[in-house]
Length: 286
Image (cartoon, rainbow, N blue to C red; front, top):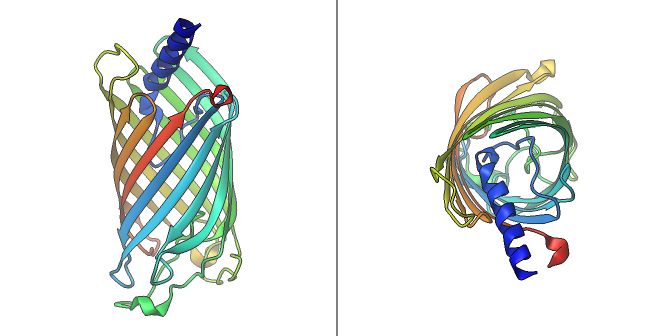
């Protein structure tokens, strides 16, 4: 029995790392985490806020659950100092993804999935003036990661070609009033979001065991378009990233994101992301 369990763990680990280049840093792939698995993640984002010059920080603790091979759920919390002088809790969100198409070949596969996300946030839409203002606060970008309540949904398609994985996302977001504040008229309540991500497995060159460290390189393009006429605008960001995966269970992500093009006024145009994640497999047997 012990040998069977060890062999199962080895196969699971190899299965996980063989798709490691799909574990994008700034976007979700169409593939899901394994069934009966639990992931614990902490993301830290750092950026300079345009209106004050203060270094903003946003912390996102997250729990992920692979319910089965087709369905996974994330529960995420948000805390930052973006809208007030000190770091405080801002709210949370729930994300669910359902994989409805799988086409498998040797060393390749194609996946498609649908996702939904809902957020409940209590932030104001304009920052506390005690931050200090070096220039007028001129922001027309909203998001569901701590900025505003709302809901989104869309489609993800991912193609794996041996060591290269390509993925694209198209979605729609509807922004809603926060718990303590209503959306000002100058913000768009409707948005289209889109992304294109590429991941390449650099190391190991050849798999020998699931304990080998993986090194993945990513290049991601992330964009939004406000569709309401009163606040129309768009942008496209580029986000290179590196990722290390240890023992097929723990990963470290490092990413830098900056704007390539756009005409949407934003609170920040550049950001750094540091993330640590640990996964536990076969949780129903532990």
